[in-house]
Length: 209
Image 1 (cartoon, one colour):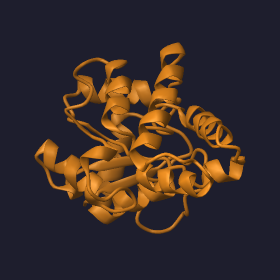
Image 2 (cartoon, one colour; image 1 turned 180 degrees about the horizontal axis):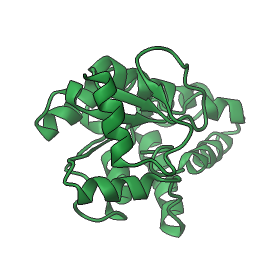
Image 3 (cartoon, one colour; image 1 turned 45 degrees about the horizontal axis):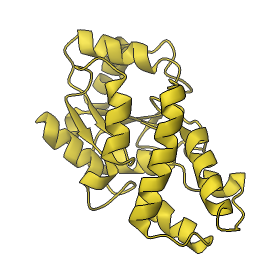
Image 4 (cartoon, one colour; image 1 turned 135 degrees about the vertical axis):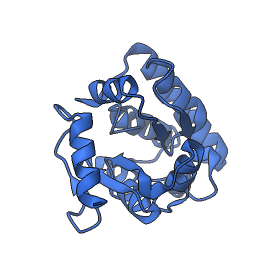
């Protein structure tokens, strides 16, 4: 979601900076980049190490609230994401949103889309193991009633790509804030702009002949 469908990473980075600085600490751009694609509980522990004197759950809830406040002002959609989701919906292709943001964040973004866009949502507080573990994508496929190997996953971060690859899905990496290693197991697309259902079908058939 974050970085693939919406460009909320600047919102997260600003919230992290505000939280760390409120405890007298320093949060750099490199610090923020190191958390892109990571599970929120891991991120919370990193922020604790930077001096934030809150529990993991308190950190997650406070960060989420700060990002949601910014989303109320503007939802920054990523290029091509809405067009592709609309085409998939019109063609009756079931989709699941698999994100490490907590559910109230995922549901806020989903609410800005047509109600039929996602057949299922897997959020960070729905799973025991966050990305890069395969559990989030395995759970998403289960909720769609298919095997992960029958799915195409689109990710923007290295941990997300690793999670999707480990699940057995056909994986597309669309790098945004961090690099995604161009190694066997996934395909790199520079952007979703101009990409269509036909492109997804072609890739899937080339991977699952």
